[in-house]
Length: 114
Image (cartoon, rainbow, N blue to C red; front, side, top):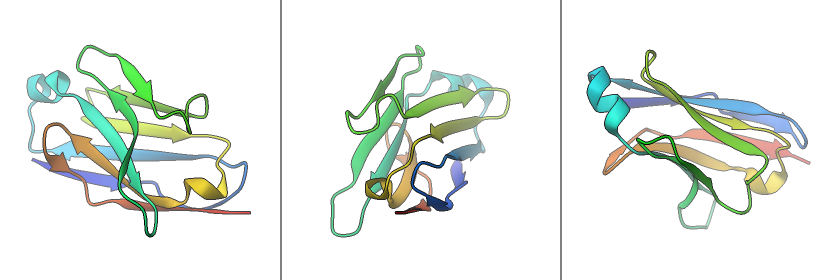
C-alpha cells in the first residue's frame, strides 16, 4: 500500500487549501475499514495529530483547527481529504496522512503567509 499526499502550497492568511491522500494498492473493503489521520509537523516541533476519521465515520480534531478544518473520505476514489479554511501562519507545516496503524504518506508542505 502506498499513500500519495498532495494539495499543499503557499496561501495567504485567511485562505483555503484542500489536501488529498490517495491510497494505491488497497482494495475497497480494506480502505473502508481503516482509521485515518492527518498530522502535521512544523519546523522545530513534534508531529501532531490534526484530524482523524474512524472506520465508523467518527471525526475528531485538534482544538487548534476545530471549526476550520474538515476531514472526509471518498471510498470510491480511495482518497482521504483535509479541507483547511481560514488558514493562519501557525498552520504552516508539513502535513502527513496516516492509514492506521502505520502507513504514512510522504508529506505535503503548507505555507501560510501573513
